[in-house]
Image (cartoon, rainbow, N blue to C red):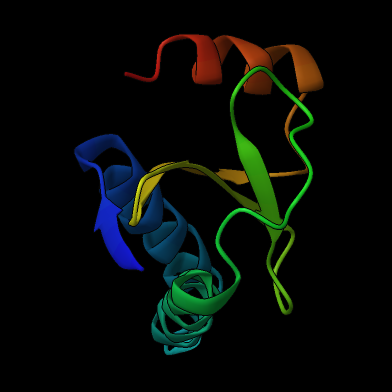
Length: 100
């Protein structure tokens, strides 16, 4: 399968990077490396995860409290959002509702 990280998901990753980098230098890079590894696993496992909200599958990160929300169309996995699971669930739903 092919992966397509949409602009808003890329912005989510950058926001997460800055959050962790402000906690301690180097953690932001570790965050990105881990999240991109999780996303790359979708080349093999895209579509097997549950759909907890509307049409979005959810992959939980192995190292960070983040979830990758994605959809599958033919042979392409579209990454719509990468969100912090510690956020208010109502905020998460609103954010996903604004996702193209």
